[in-house]
Image (tube, rainbow over all chains, first blue to last red; front, side, top):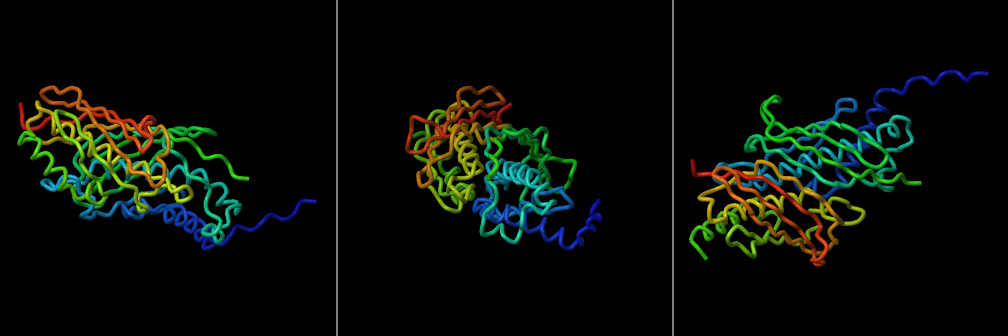
Length: 171
Length: 140
């Protein structure tokens, strides 16, 4: 006999689980906190946000954001998006229990193999945004493309392509 | 030390983000720069192992490569990164300082080409390597 279909979960329950997972992923990394990077979520789509801060300046004469900060912002966005995508199925099925994440810790993060950053314009003293696209993600390796902009979505100030080593599944 | 190198040194030591990461310029001459970055818990990328985030290594590499370009005798002024690729060969040992050494190995009228490596205290096994192209400014 077929069991009756499970009713859909209330939207708050799903949102709470998604947001708690994302929060655990981002707040656990000291360097992300140091740079002040945040993430905004629309469904499964993530946008990295780097609010401008004096300590991010690399050229005080212009002034411009440090190239290293730009590279780091793109790399962080790539890693978080990659982990998020990798965890998504488990978040949706409820296999990841967001309430226990803080204590148990999250699965390991992907490791950067290499990343190549193109500096298209100088980073202005404004907030910056970034989105990553996973070009290919296999069991062991992933290739990710990231774009960053400031005031205009169409005027990128940097883009990057990176390769990452995927974490091994925990038992 | 030439006055140009002196200016480059002052410029690099005044960069707010480099200061925030505790970078120290230890060598700067003829297209070569060496910069050290002490271990700091706020730079950790993997809380489980305490390993420094790749992004912090990128910032160190970028600063060091830019410094090498500014210290090159054929580069009259400032510089900006056009592109920078970083290969991460292994995790840096938690607790150890990271040292980057960059060499600006070729300069044209408009572009400077740079290579760099970063090591922790085990100087025989690099942590990361970088190659990049930088602008040459103040000429044309």
